[in-house]
Image (cartoon, rainbow, N blue to C red; front, side, top):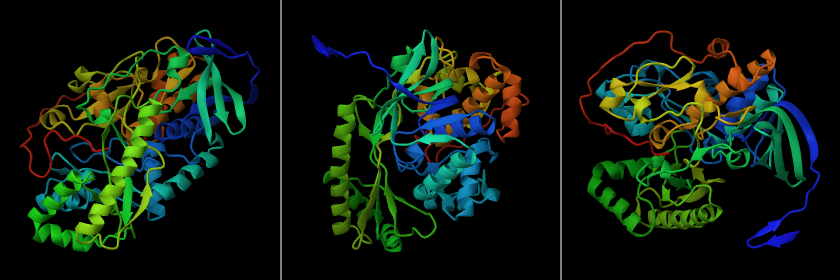
Length: 476
């Protein structure tokens, strides 16, 4: 090993190939689950690589245990497919909470107020929105079930560190683990790392500019406090709202947090969630990640100590869980075959290669004028690399689109489209950039993915904020 200035030159080495597959998916979060399961169910021999010892990413380890915004402003469900299957499996285990179907889209003030007070994730634009509050631990088991049933080979505790490139063709992935440095070859590679971890080494162009005022500019370290007498907290909040708000303000002054959410999951009446935001220079900088880990746990302790001492209902409380992984909201964004931009937020026209419809409920009157965001297959394709798809929040978009459409159900939908496309491309003997779009859309529809069949231009009027802000920013 020779040293050259601030660099060292590593010796050439042989890396053992431990597996060959049709499709290699890097990252077992929501996007990776969608990609791997859909690829395998469509006949592809599939490998899934995950750096932690569990699947689900932000939806489990990140404690962002909300699958939100599944319906449009009318109450029509627009995100179904594998997202709904995950929820259905949770329903079977009594491990999920969501509004009654007959209430989706309701503008009845009492019904809206009920769900807003239960969880403001369940309301948007003064309407009831279908959002599922999920159990993180049961979800880990359920996702294991789904990949095992699909026959996917999973490598946990393994980092996908580097793509194996031959010119502009991606031929597989290098992984690093307790077993050492190994190689997995694949006909198609799908980056579902969330952060586009393979981009710099594959020569894929990307952006990473994020203005500090956007939601996605922040990291999070979420934690849960148990042993809370939530009825006592609620009674105090109702009877003494000024005192409650003063205590919340003082908690912040003491270096902690002021706001929290009720769990609402079955048999978790004594648990509250603390979500937070930590500004940072970069969400892929190891020093920044380490800083937020330390700062986050310090804030957690200060919050807990203040609430236990001062807030009625927290007298017997205790910290039950903190995020095994940081909440990362955005970092690298691919510059793909098509980049979704702010201009697309104001366009009601579907793309010819639409592979998903995302309800747009967070932008007030603009959302009612443009109620759905159409997602083209091309935003999953890099410009200059073949045999490669992106199925995570690193999809091709600008910062404005990213700020609204990189949540858990969005990533599952990216994955479902990418995995299905990969399997169809292999069957047809073509590259992923030449997959038959009509065949892809037909197969996605069979899998329960709603897609546009007619183009309608609609304009509605928003009466202004009452229970929720007309320009709400998602808290995740």
